[in-house]
Image 1: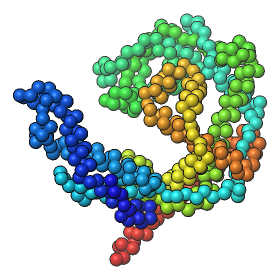
Image 2 (image 1 turned 30 degrees about the vertical axis):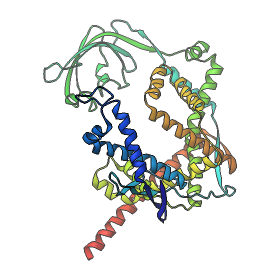
Image 3 (image 1 turned 120 degrees about the horizontal axis):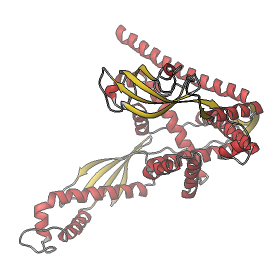
Length: 457
């Protein structure tokens, strides 16, 4: 195999690769010998068909198969030999091929840029430490108690009120006709929650046990059966039970029921949960601050094919006019994502950062434990979706890189309470929404400006 650099312009390199005809002939003979064991032809015993006969009958397809394999193997070797970092799928342009000839092809490669990482000494960011007020913990505790309240039967002559739980059987019709799922037994709904069908439960206010209540409602637009979505429906509801809510007593027994040792332990768990939720958002703000500095301080040429691929992924579900309308802004976002991805990956490689299988398994187990009652579903999701595990691994890798960068920059830790945290998160979200709107306006104004220039011409 002979490999030469044909041309090099920017990030694009073209290699000329030549495989001599003797190598191709050897590969052909190897494949014919393999097929001799597999091919069965009339008049020959299995495994005894002459290679020459196999070649005369199947030569063209065998040659194509051999060339395809040679191209895959030699293109990889050529890239390795020239120590090129490939961005995306290389393109192959056949220049010469055919039996009895050398194989000559060009390999067009978009390469990843060489990245010179800037020192992090001038980088600054704010990290957050949050203190959860007792008031917030008590409010959350009350919310948990309300979510886990018990219900006890009301007297038979008592009517249902908002906040009560009503148990009923129903039979429903659309235009007087039954439909799939038109009957239900022992349905329980809490009046005022509006969780069954919109405006349904309020119509049950005032009913008594043993009564049959006619209710008119509209099936939801996201009904599983699309033919039934938004259909006016009449429900005949037989009331078989009415229960009133009984406040849960917030004590050690309640704490044990929630999976804690006692009330002190439950309050600690609630504090950790709230703190984790706030820190997740606050850490994203710190991360954005770091990423903005990384992007600003590094000038990198980006492979066009990666930009095109990223734009395609971002816009594949949009209509053509939407793609064109926001083309400039989408390219800007794509370039930013690719640039930051390359910079972070370079940090990871330079510092030999990796995510081991053990770390990945531990993170999956953490997620499994964090969803009580759904452990099996979460575990099966990752087992059946290798891409989900790979995506999680990518997120963990990025987090490890960001944590490394945090350890090397000037990170000012600011201690705040939940009120200040809410303000910081709200302002950050508003700023990003405003930025997106500004980018869209700029894109729209540019289109209008271009349109005017065209009309003047």
